[in-house]
Amino acid sequence: MPSRELSPALVRTENMKILEDIAECLERGDSASLKVLIHAALAQNIKADDILRESLVRGMDALGVKFKRNEVFIPEVLIASRAMKAGLEILRPFLSEKRDTAGVTIVMGTVRGDLHDLGKKIVQAVLEQAGCRVLDLGVDVPKERFVAAIRKERPDIVGLSALLTTTMVYMNDVVEAVERAKLRKQVKIIIGGGPVTSSFAYGIRADGYAPDAFSALDLVKKLMEKKRRNSRSSNG
Image (cartoon, one colour):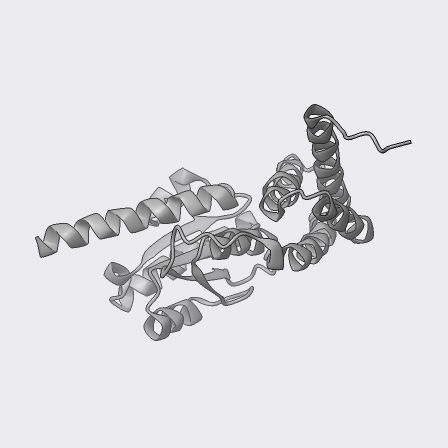
């Protein structure tokens, strides 16, 4: 018998199911199953961008909510982090080459005392997909390294990340170090991470806060557009 072509509605349903399954594997930290499902999703012509947004980012966002509610703890987050990295390695060659923020240089790092970089890696992947040049300083980064990176790389934006309430206060130390080095006017500073809030960002004189990766991309676009407007005004 000839094969029956699936209806568009059924295709959408099946695609949604596999995206949900990938997100659930991520939350469980099941790297092996996650990799199999991502390959299957790509074989079904699901876009890598959609897998990133609807599965990996959504799964990590859900895990972040559970972490805030003390329903999961650091070991589970670290296991999910490994699964996330495995998924990103598969998807990276297939992500679309968007250039909304082409030419923007961003230095990122998890601040001193904090060894968690999952959220930062997600943000990095989304920003690179949009055309940004992202320099990742890694984890447990002291304020001196941020200052040195600003001097050397002359980035447009510095991104600070922290997962713990005990380490997010160090973000203020970084901002103050950049100010003391007289580099503050050269760079915008944005922050993010599990315990971080917009009011905290305002309190430490950061230029913005993003609760997730795609919000971070929107924030970068807004800051760069504001910079371009100011540049046109000063040159006009």
